[in-house]
Image (tube, rainbow, N blue to C red; front, top):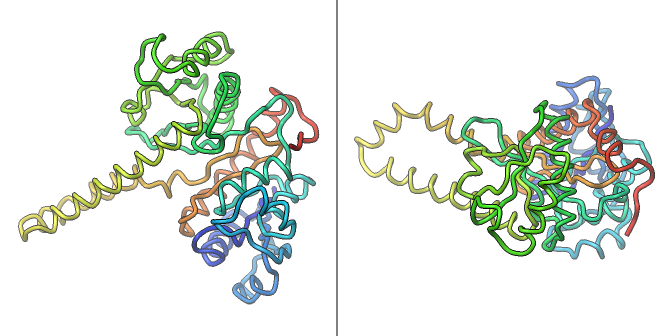
Length: 334
């Protein structure tokens, strides 16, 4: 098993990527970790601390967070992200992980690796937390701002396969993000998608409102990238504000601080449930290879979690399962 890591991607690159890769290589000796980035820089940071299953593939350039995605991918073929994508395309790596520019990773998936035959628009599928700790796979949460009903149908099928293969869920429940639970609710996209999902070979449970996502009314939540990204950012913002308000109140008096000390274990459990670092590693479903997006501000623990998820996907044959559904072969470049 070989997993390529974009060493120069993310807000804290390359240090967190190197730390995570070292930890992953030591914990999983059956996995070869391939770091893509400037060889001299990476060797200098690592020194002699390199397990036998960790190696470096030289990539002189890096794609910055503010670069225009398609232009950056085309103009920087020697960037760490594009080189990692090329390793996947050529079969030299079974999966890749990057914390870099999301748009550029999408472009790498399309232009370098290619789409799966039968897939019109790949979708980004992060895990959202749920109260029962199982989580909800949601797609698309930002890869494509506009979508057609057929795209949402493809997301539903790919999400179902992902949850079956990677998470071992039998007949995962698929829901459609909407403003109400009744079948006739929503805009024209939602209504048309509902009709397609009803006829699809999936366990479709109908519309799901945003307020019910954390209660895990479904295992796979389907939506277009515009509304999905709003949902994701709203949830992240709500958690951040709630955490800040709670911290402020608990430090408001000596009595509150004493109560906080007593409740610290409970607070830690809640924080872990809502911590995106625990759910890090969103697959880009629909490309002809396994590509995982790590959060841009990830620490080493989060990047290692993304590597772990990539390992599970490879080990459980996710790419083969998707290819069996949509057709294998060389990806279709755009």
